Image (tube, rainbow, N blue to C red; front, top):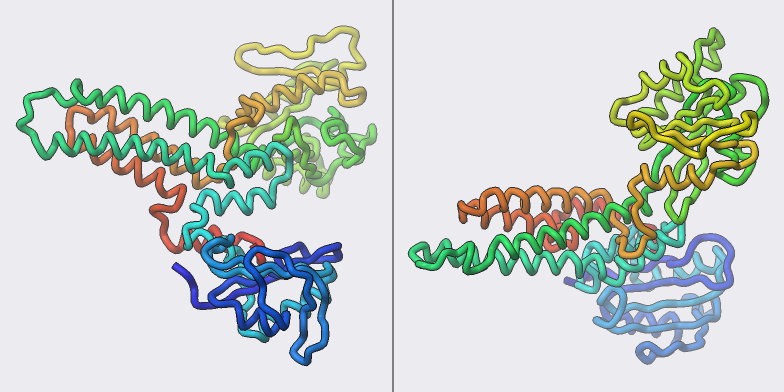
Length: 446
C-alpha cells in the first residue's frame, strides 16, 4: 500500500550537531538522486558525495545511502543524506529536495508508511515514538522490546489460541448432533484457562510498561512548615524549592520529575493548607486542591513531633476517597526514637528526615509499591492507555466466554470480541481516525 507522493524531512533534531540527516521516501528516487548527487547509488552502500544545488554549486558534502523498496524502513525507496548538522545547511538541502519534487513529510509519516507497507505493526510503530521519548533507562529497554516485536508476539500468541478455540466451538455449532461432549473432548475450558493465564501475564507486563511511559503524579500536601519543600528537594537531589522557617513560603505549585529505579515520578510541591486571610496564599491553597484532584498519589506530610493533629485529620478527610495516601512523618531528626515505617488500621506511614535524608530508601520503596511497580522492568512492554483499555476489554470478553461456556453461540461470540480487542493493539482492526491521531503525535522526520 504505497503512496504516490515522495516525502522528505530532516530526520535529526534541530540545532547544531556533528551530523544532520535528510530522509527522502517514495517511488523511483533515481531522478532525484541523479539531480542531487550527479550520480547513481548502489543499494545499501555508503557513498561520499557532494550535495548539489540547482545551479550546480555544492550545498554540502557528506554520505549518501540508497535503500531500494521493499528493503527499507518505510517499504519504499529511501534516500538518506548525511551532512553537517547545522540548521542552515539542513534547510538548504531540504529545500533542494522539495524543488526536485518531494513534499515536506507530515509528523510521523515515515513510520506510518512503514506500518501501511507491513514493515511494522501498530504497536511497533508506536514504540518508535516511545523509544525517542524514553526518559529513563528502564523506559528505553521496554520501548526497544516493543519495537523488536516482543509485545506483538505475546498478543499474537493469545490471538492464535483464541482462533484455535473458536474453530473448535464453531465446528461444534455447525454439527450439533455430534455424540461427543464438546467441552470434555476438546478440553475447551482447559484451553480457555491457558488463554486467561497468558492474558493476565501480558496485562501485568503492559501495566508496568505504562508506568514507565507515563510515570506517577505525586502531590505533597500538609500544613505549612511540615517540610514539603524540603522533601521535594531531598527527592530531587537538588535545591528546586525555596525552604525557610517562615510558614507559607510556598505560594504556588513547584513541579519536579524524578526517577526511582527507572520509574518516573512527577512530584508536585504545594502551598501549605491552613485558614488564611492572605489573598495570595489562598490562591496557592486553591491550586493545591486542584493539583490533588489530578494526582495519582498523595503524600500527606506531618510533623513527627506532633503526630496526627485535628488539622491534619481535616486535610485527610478532604482528600478524594479513591486517592491513595501515604502519611509521611517528617523531622525525625528532632525526636530521639522513631520507627522507619508502620501500618495501622490499613493506613501506611513512613518516618523520614527531609533535612538529613533519613528514611528515604523506605519512602522510595513505598512509592514504588503504591504506584503498582512489582518488578525490575524485565518483561515489561512500553504500553499506552489504549493498549491497556484493549487488554482490559479483552479480559472482560474472556471472562464472559467462561460464564457462557454452555451456550456455544455466546461462547463463540465472546471469543471473537476478545480477539478483535487484542488485534486492535497491533493494528489488524484499526479505524483511520485512530491512525491519524497516533501518527500526528510523532516528530517530523520520523
